[in-house]
Amino acid sequence: MTAERADQAQAAEPAKEPLEKAENVERFEVTRAIAAPATRIFGLLCDPNGHVTIDSSGMLQAADGETVRAAGDSFVVHMDREALNDRPMGRYDVTVEITRFEQDTLIEWTPTHPAFQPSINHRFGYRLRPTADGTEVTSYYDWSHIHERYRAAGIFPILQESALRATLGILARTVERDA
Image (tube, rainbow, N blue to C red):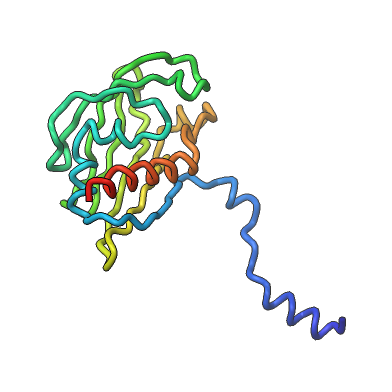
């Protein structure tokens, strides 16, 4: 191969991300097309028990509280960390505090617990975009603003990107069968 052809081939290759950048990811985001209207999907996401229904981690056992309708609303989720078999936390409760809410478009929350002080400040959420065939749903998990105490512990992320993808699969199965 001539030097000119080697330069052309190298120029045609997409630039590779530096390894340091890949190691510093602090947010997972996955998207899936779901054959159901945004209103149906959003309704399930506003129902505390809907979160239990679609959880792929096995940690969410039950929920108590009213359907959320705005940022600032909250509900309680009964957790079982043993489902992940990674930390000896057993059963505990968290309060899910809704941090962002746009009807049928966006819901975001942070789990809180009195024993976790200062607050961890990791966020979970869903963005919905209606399409001709249903809804494009993006699930995200963001730990970019966690308190330095938790960052130094080296335990984040607590879920993997695959868990978000699996939860979207369960969400699709749940709302599409009701369509």
